[in-house]
Length: 180
Length: 445
Image (cartoon, rainbow over all chains, first blue to last red; front, side, top):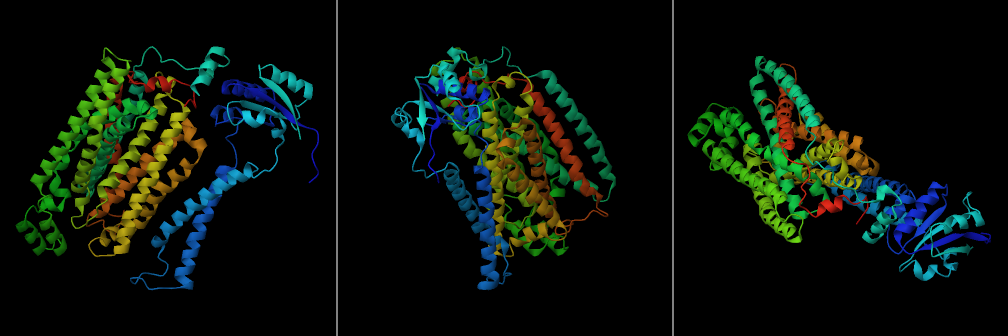
């Protein structure tokens, strides 16, 4: 992959989550889409402001669950009917009621794992390098008591001067340029 | 997050993030509720009139009685289930509980009507229950000699005689309603006193009332579960005197939770078109309650399937016929529909976050759940009778259609009474710390 160069985005630092949420809402209203909030703990309003609730995790979870139920049910059928047929209390070999509970457990297992790993994958993790760590105040602040909004340079709305002026309207503690 | 929100309020940046205020009047929207009640009464009246037709059909009166039992059990489910969910929200706490409290109280107050509705069942007991038709060993022996009872039915009826005989059934009904009406009366009276407390709004008042309600509700839930187990056995399960199932009472409990949650969500969504519920009803709470309904959907199928799986594995002649009578001879259609309507459809719909948070879609989901619960009740009741066991048929048996009209009539009348009770009180219990929380913006934790 060619090394990316130039500016990654502008990051604004805030002292309170409300200021962050307000700035995010305004940025969205101004047409910015490629942006991200960084907070030391989950801030639901920030997710709301980013319109973040529509993502693919539920779909992955559903697909995982369907995969689990099918895999388990077919496997049990194969084992009981063809691979190792056993006469259990004179019941038919294909005794589906007995297959339900393992199939149910596999549904939960697969759904849980695909939700967990799917979330990690969709977040782009594991990630060994992220440009934001080039910002001097980000490293400590984002994990303790500061709230950051980053407007990314890939956004068509982005212009170095215009976006900086926009972010400075919100009384941010600082607005810092982040390099790739 | 509280800090952040205060800041928001001061800055006045955007109104939807600031705390809201309770409207001046907390009274129920009488006009709207009266209109709903009129509609219910019209539906109930029409259904009752159509039901009369079935008196002329052969086997009709019997079916009307059975359908009455079904409608009765559904009404009891709303009233008793409302009472137990009311107690549950007192012990669990939570904002959803404050939101549902007055609707649940209104449901629990319908127990008075439900107790009266039980009288016809007591009166016509002999036509419904074998143990009532043949109340002692001599009678069962005579019935066996005439071929009216199988040997097994005769022997089990004799063995279960202490619990299943007319006198004992009356005593059990008196105890069930006596205890439930007492608990209901206390909870409802205290709720009014709580709001009228001169110290209302102070920490000591909050604590005193919370502890008082918790102390009754905790033990009340246990008592309810025991009484419901007894009632469901005597009223429904004993229609088939030979059958055993230790999960029966719990299954009814979960079924009641299912139908009561559906009706509660429906009630608050409809009420949220008007003040005061409009001001306090947040999507967050609707989402929470829908998740709760989803949990009950799962728990319900879990119990139903567990019972089936255990009996299927055991495969013993004492228990298996109960299922055979409900699967063979056309009943598999109802059985499959029961599974699809009762679990598959609500399960798939309630998986979706968007549906759970959408008011108009949830109206449909909750109505569907109430319908599905009724279908389940039909499947539980009708195959108990000799003419229907393993033999679902319509030709020459039009009386079976009474299962559609009679329960609709009873539930409509019940519903009208529920709405009447709902109008009697302000819709928000104000002397409760949750009031402040529920007025906060969405997501405030």
